[in-house]
Length: 198
Image 1 (cartoon, helix red, strand yellow):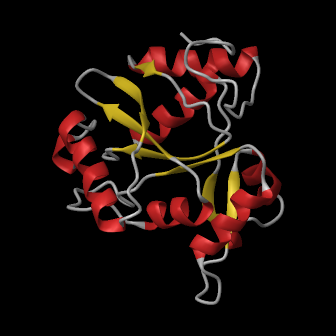
Image 2 (tube, rainbow, N blue to C red):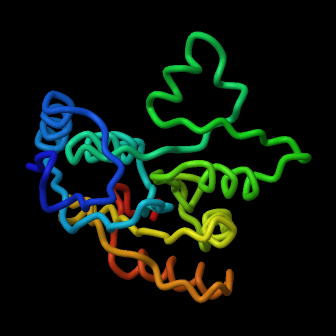
Image 3 (spheres, one colour):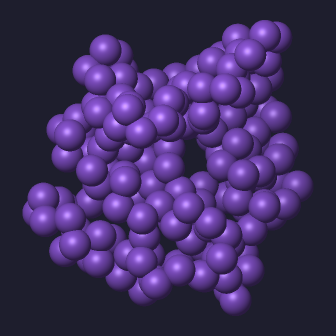
């Protein structure tokens, strides 16, 4: 599988880990019979969307893939979870504390977070659930527009057992249109681990 300097990463890919953690990631993927295809973009700041999200196994796939290629990505978590002693652990693993009160808009918080950091990628599951959905939630688009960062699409193909590093979404900055086209791409090209939920 992937090594730290490999065909999957690009010069701007935020990295983490070492040979041991990459070996662990390789073993996780090998044990469950999955592989990674494609390449990560050469972008310093990115919002990653992964779909279809149909199973609890998706988290294991994401973590195994991240470890295997040595990718560091962040994810949002309510700020109340960052209490001692877990707070430092969540941050070390990529957690970003979010204030979900009405006075603090999450889009603005994440736009500010992107501006404050030089090389960060944020991972989001656009469905917001493991159940079948007609439309993706639009928060990922609002964040991308506000922070002026691209969206990179990763597909989970349960039929081929592949984590597909597909490419950057072509954004029109029309929220409804972009959301519809991105959802259509995932619907057309990928079947999740539990197809009945996809």
